[in-house]
Amino acid sequence: MNAIHIPLRTQRRFLRSCAVLLSFLAIILLLYTTSIIRASNESSVTLFSPHTTSCAQRISPGLPKDYTNAPEQPPLCTNLFGTPYLESLRDHATEYCTPDSPASLTCYHTQIKPGDRIDTFCIARGAVFDPSQAKYILPCTLRDLPRASGIPSLREFHLYWYGTGAGIIIHNSIRIVPPHKNTLNINTTIPPDKQNYTILTKREGGQNFWHSLMEIFSMTLSLDVLQMTPTPDTNTSTPLFAPSSIPNTDVTLVDTADAGPFIDLWSLFAHKPVRRLPQPSTTTTIDETTPLTLTNLIIPLPGASNPLWHGDWSVLPCTSSPLLRTFITRILSFYDLLPVPEADPNTITITFINRTSTRRLVDAESLLWALSTSLHPDPKIKIHIQSIDFASLPLLEQLRVIRSTDILVGVHGAGLTHAMFLTPGMSAVVEVLPEGLEHKGFRNLAGLVGVGYFSLHGDGDDDKGGSSADGGRGRRMGRRRSEVGGEEEEDWHERDVRVEGDRFVRAVMAAVESLSNSGVRSWDVDGVGGLL
Image (cartoon, rainbow, N blue to C red; front, side, top):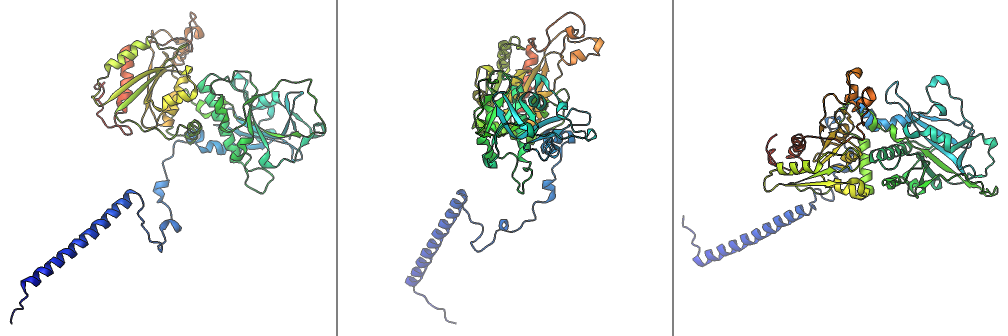
């Protein structure tokens, strides 16, 4: 067969055409690949065409049950610190007024375990304030509650320390009168969405951070239960208290303590100014032709009933709390301190709580100096130590300090309440307890919020803090011999705490080394001063 002869010029023209075509195709491919990468970086890749139905638009069978069946905590933990605590209150509501009463008094009860006290909060709907008596008037005929029901009468409501609790507030600030004896002209035509709410409370004082937070925490739990409770005698699911009611809500204090540095937090669920219950006015006259505006009184759970008070002398195995997590988020949102600030992986900030009155750490400056000289970090790791008098700062500034703190160090006291605002999984607290004191409250708190906890006790003579007469209980509870026999001495509340320098350094170093691979950190455990 004769071979076909193609002229050399034609071959070259063909090869040039092929080269041009291949170059064009390569450019098209490059542009297409670049557009895909750019689209991926801009998170704008379309996985489905407009004519394709995504899985999200169809009924999904959901995750495999192994993902949703998370291991539960012990019942004690869920009942105290989980939503079952709220549900128990909601499900144990009791109406104390008869159905024909124009007002109502509904109280919610819970009991952590059989034999414990019964904790209570109430809502009184349809009350009016009488300035001549400086009391709220509630036209209500009280029901006869069967004794066998176990429901406490108003007189049986628990009285908490500092004279707090729903029972004492109702007794001192609310006058329950039979409807036929009520002479006040009450405006009952206010629509539900316009009704006023008053949170009527008595505080334990206004200066102690722990006590104040427990009161405010208990108040929010009470309002959460009301948000979970439908309004009686209606065909809707409208709750007894809704977020839309917050602008119409005020907090009225029936105590005489100073406002204190934490008063703003009472505005979490009340946008009207905080006020005090006025004194009786004999000069005030009520115009009987002008209807008085009714209000709904909320008498919240007292601070002493808060779940965080339970078991504070016992080690609890609880590792999380939806109730506490929600409360913390509410406070941080209130002060616009969310989200969590971005952490520096090579910096550790140690904040020492500088107590200036009672329970001071003896020679604190020397101990902090010894700590600083014991730290020999890798050059890329920075350790910042600061001593802060939190009592001298507004609460917002206190929280800002804590949000930038990795390790919180302090003697047992209200300042360690700040541990709840540390960053979970990336921080720790070191508690110095008075010699012999076996309080577990802050240890349990650290476990609930997911931060590390380290403790050491103050140094003391073996024969102090208790005696064999009480089986050593005085020593374990931090009591001095003045309480169990022997010479008088100050108790642990007032006494300064002394700790040997090497013990203090070892405790804080243990906390530092525990953070070596937490969060965004990744350095050797002995990178700040060697193994202990």
